[in-house]
Each structure stands twice: as structure tokens, then as C-alpha cells.
Image 1: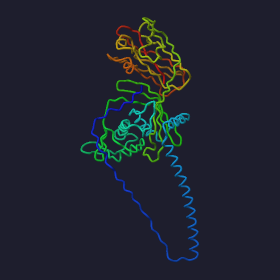
Image 2: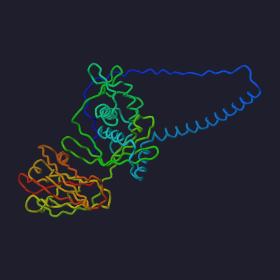
Image 3: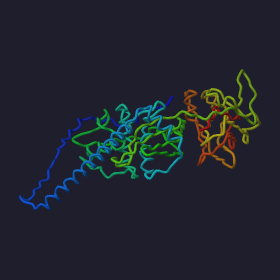
Image 4: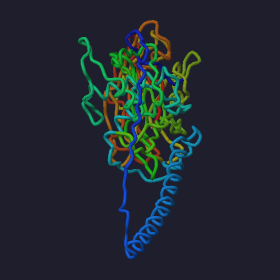
Length: 419
């Protein structure tokens, strides 16, 4: 189940948004001519008038054409969710690019992932419920005010010793960022006397996209890459491939506006697993490599050699040769606190993706009394990933470090996955 919770915000009073009066101004040009003119002057004037009429007609035709283009652009910019998905699929079939405003686009996409407002159902950002909009707005203002990056704007002021943003600036930013047409503060967002007071929060989990790529056509830009749920406790859950679609927008300060986001669930299929050894079955329980890909955190593979199993291997055979970024190892016997405590865990491992593409790193192990198997699995996932993805159909994981349990030195792993 995808986690989509609102970032914890400080409780503040919500005040009525001030109404802004728009004053429309107009003007006209005046001109005149003399009372008399020669025949030559009249003829010239008539010719000039004729030319002007033709020019106006041509200009009118061009304007009509431009109006049609603008109308078409508006229609394209307001795609339905299914049309957004179709557009993403079209872009994914093209070659990756490096957009001119790549830094800005990355930061805008990070606001989405850190705000945790997308899941595998997909959502048009300007049509989200206001609670999720508030979560996105929190991240936007955080980036605008504090991060000092590409989207930074020096718009903060001080009101009664508090940091504040003029309401009109906030409304402009939200419209430019994700197409907000009618900013209405959520219950925790504070707006008073024409100012928005940014909120502060800390310690919440987030989502992050790694190894991102960009695709684009004349009207849209796609940001995509493997996405993970992460927390300060070390939890790293693969969520799928994040797809964040931008509509190119010359009226936006950022050159583009966030349009649509989703997680694409295309996990790599592991067809079979080979292990260099396995613990013999006992009491009706098996410890084979098949347990590593059964989706059950109460079953495990356990190595079967003397000692902690340093040097033992797990070989993953994929269903086809494909692009792979890394693997996730769910460490230990996560069926219960007692099982985890009593058995060995991996402390370090390497992953060989073929043709010299190998990574090595520490493997997390955390145990908490009273936690369920799912809780233990959440806190014992570790990514081993490449700097750049490679084409492969085989991954070999080697235990390069292990720690004995309170009762047994059998090193256990409950699940593995490739992405």
C-alpha cells in the first residue's frame, strides 16, 4: 500500500483571505487631418488606406490563426488523467533529453515527491483536494524561501517579527508552479491581512526519485525515475517509477507548470533464484531461495554453511534482459522480534550486475520489540544501486559481512527485489 500522508504542519489559525480589487485601465489615441488636400494627396491617401485595409485584413487573419493556436494550446494544457497517461507513454517511447531549465524542473518535481501527493492512481495537481494542495504548497514555499536554489525568490518580509509572504506573491507562485487558480488556505495554512505565513515542520518521511530522466516534445516535459519512500529511521521502500508531467508554459516564471503525477508499477520480474547454499528444512519450514521472492516477510532464505555465511551468494535470474538500477535487500528473519534477534543478519554485501558493474555497501539491521513482520521489514531494507543503470538479466548478491544472532549464526534474508 502506498503511503500518502500529509506532512505534519504546525497548527495555526486560518484567517479570511483578503479580496484583491483589480482596476482595469484603458486609453485611446486621437488623430486628425487638414481640411484640404490636392488630388495627388487624395490618391496617395486612398492607396495608403487600401494598403492599410489589406494589412488589417491580413493581420486579422493572423490574429485569428493565433487565437486558434492559443485555443488549441489551452485544450492541450488541460488534459484529462487518461490523456496525461497517454502523453507520458508517448514521451517514454522517445529518447531522453537534457532540458535547458533542468535545475528548475528537478526542484519542482522534488516538491511533488517530498510532499507525497502522488500514488499509483495518478492525479492532476491543480485538481487535488485542498489537503494535498497544502502539502505541495508547503514544499513549494520551503524551496522558494529557504533552499536558495534555482526556484529561490527573495520575497520574504517580516511582519510583527514573523516571516511572511505577500499574498499576491504566493498566489502567483502557486499558479506558476501547479496551475492553482483559486488559492484557498487549508485549515493549517495561515493567511492574515494580505500575508501568507509559511509553516515549519521536521522529521517526517518523504519520497525521493533517483536516476531521473527527462523526455520532451513541443508542449510537454516528462520527469521520471525509480521512486522510494524514505524516513529518518532508514526505511527505503520502492514505490514504482515516478512520472511527473509538466506543461510548457511561457507565462510561468519557471517556463513550465506541474500538470500530472503518478507512480508506474512496473517492478522487474525475477523468474528464479539460485543460492550457493541453504539451511535444511525443519519443523515444516523451508529456507530456500524461493522465499526471497514470495512477497512474504515471515519466510526467509538462510545460508547453510558453517559460520555466518560470508562469501555465500544469491543469484537472481530476471525474466528478460532489461534496464536495471539496483536491488533492495530486506535483511534478517523478519517474522518476529524473537526470530530476528535469534538469527544472523547481513552487515555488508555486494551486487554484481555483470560486465564489471558491481556495488558494495553496508546493509541495515534494526530490531524493535513488539514490531510486526511488516514493521521489521520496513526498517531493514537496504538499496545497493549503480550510478548509472545497465542492461542485464542476472544479478549476483554476495554476503561480504555478517553478524551472528543471539542463538544461531545462520544468516537470514527475507526478501530481495530488483528495480
